[in-house]
Image (cartoon, rainbow over all chains, first blue to last red; front, side, top):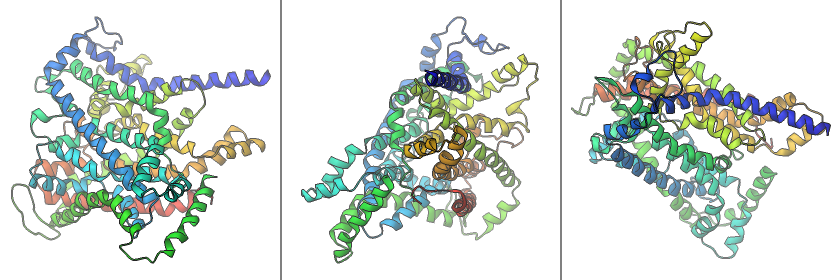
Length: 277
Length: 315
């Protein structure tokens, strides 16, 4: 009985600490949503007010008319979904060969992959821009999509760590049964690696969804803009349309929040470091 | 347990491969290369080739508008005389020096909070991860506003307890601390990685510690933290690299100007300006290479010291 009381006390303390800390993290977001519903006149009041008076749902409608919201949404979805597809198709395949297959040059290539992870994107940014420019891809979303199909070092690294943790016995058994390497990979390893694949997919999805520098460099035509770029259009010479901008930010953030809430456990399971040596 | 399994299975399969006469085109090699082929192509096209050409560009006056000519080390010489270049280095180092250690302390502490076994953890985790999910552009605008000296929330709250808040982003002294504050708010990704690291620490260690009568403090400092060091090491390297590449937040907050008085002009912002605003791509490439060398040197230092403080399981 005594132990039960102590346990209850500990859990209450834990909740208290978590709630206090949560407030700091959630306040700015609550502010974002609250502002997205305020009339312009209320936005600049001091001291700040939390509850919109009246609720200006209209901001959301006006925001989608102020910028071509649905075009930008479609562009963002296309880039995000296809590039995520690229990452989840390629990275596990490459990572598997690093973790489980034995071939000449494997270790050298893996070290190079880690080294590449440390190259700041800015070093390759300019030559890549010139390459894409020569290919006539600047002004199209292709530079933001195609490279994902050729592997992302960070994701390859995470996937490899995960595969390292899977026992070899399964592979050996399937081999004895006469399965080819690709069948072993596709029918045994991929289903087992689902949490890790989800994790790298989510990383890519979030990265592409909120990417700013990439679209800024490569999308020259306003019809191809993504939502990140669209957000900037609420700031112009006449000032900033705060309420509308916050409305679009809220719409941009909500889908990923929901996604994260439901996937967080699997997501965390998918990242493992036990294989770092 | 897992480690033991791993090393065991590795020794099991090795002789199998070695007994095959190793010609370069044997089946095992070809399969391996085929699996890795997309990345090998990607590595060459998107990394090795651009890396090589950017060295070359850094010795020329290349711009998109004209082919440019070979000028040797001129870009580098000019850079060392460039005032804004030094300011941008100062700003970037300032940010990294404060942000990286703080992000590790806060990141690990938060992860420990989020690793407790209580109800509703999915909700808490989502809340802590929230800032990472807000697009950077929105984040920048949001904070510009929270920190607005006149009508922002932060000064509004400080006002309530009788403190007159600083001008934050409008002040040369406070602009960088403001940015550090904002960035700390968005460490959710690192926290996730720490959480995953906790998952890799075997439960038996805690059971053993409990049998020995260890308290919370001892368990944290003698079990959790030492076994978390590989993950801290990983986040330290990635965090340092990230800190030196600070771009979107300061860029969108200042409309690319780095105001006030260049106090928010970060290295990559200046690099971007040179390359894509002034079209001095040779000059920008030289900057990129200097950044690369700095990052490589720092990473090397971290790696060298890691032997002293990173503990791997099973060793």
